[in-house]
Length: 112
Image (tube, rainbow, N blue to C red):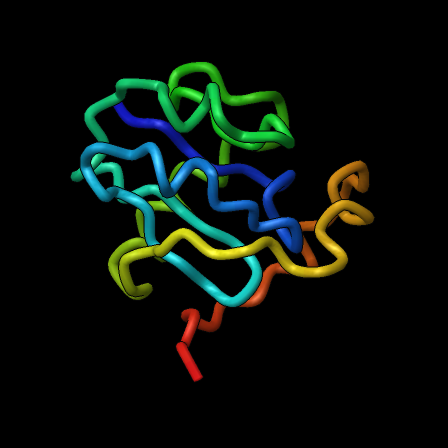
């Protein structure tokens, strides 16, 4: 069992979840984070810390978000370990938006 980051995180990318993860299971893209299911200890600390309710247990994904389990698995193999960062300046504006899947950047995060 593992936790999965879903659509609500896209373009918000708050990283409180990254900070509390004892397994360092988070991986980071340009505008999204994912959880490596092979590293996740299923402790749910990240789920409790997520300000946009984007993280769910893989067995309890919201309807229509089931594809994010495989997406987390795939991107976790390609993206670098996530770090605690300030959220994007416009994160609060994106926090209440839905239907953001088409805005997901598949690029890994690169420090400049």
